[in-house]
Image 1: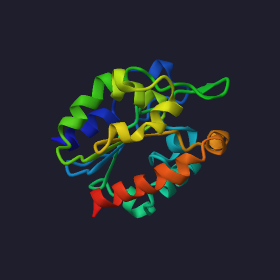
Image 2: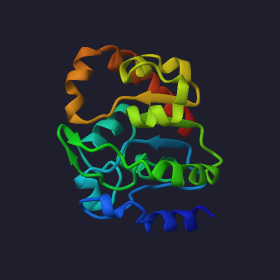
Image 3: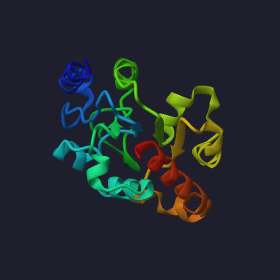
Image 4: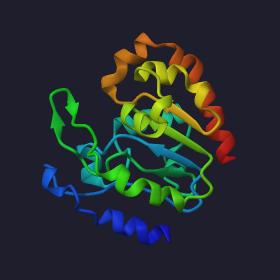
Amino acid sequence: MLEDLLSEVRHCTVCEPHLPLGARPVLSAHPKSKILVVGQAPGTKVHASGIPWNDQSGRTLRKWLGVSDEEFYTPEKFAIVPMGFCYPGKGKSGDLPPRKECAPLWHAALLERMSELQLTLLIGQYAQKYYLKGHAKKNLTETVRSFEDYQPDCIPLPHPSPRNRFWLKKNPWFEEILIPQLQYRVKKVLY
């Protein structure tokens, strides 16, 4: 049962010795989830609240998707399963990469228990490299620009972090072309 597995994941301490704030796995899923959101790892605000995407990046993501907070936080609609479930710590230019233990240890078992998934959103390079394997392009920009290659099951996205505002300015096609198609696909899956 998914509920039992989620409980097991939420009590995971496999990489706790490497986590500056300790283990606090943050994820959300339901057997009837329709859309899978695979991001990087929780930041400090999400670690503190225990609510996935409960920060500025999450507000931007929900805007991109064209959904309300209520819709996004309905597990029957959105499963939120990051590459790393716990805050990994601070690096030189932002948070450290997600811990490598989580995805191989838990993702397949979680996905097996969500049989109604119709769309996967791969947010950031870590999710894209892991899930697209050899089908990712040479960099995140090219992978995201080639989003039509991965449809209808998958859409790669950049991270919605405020740190990526320069990327968004350099790539106006993202908001002009990809976002309307993303919102259309999300609505089609949910309704």
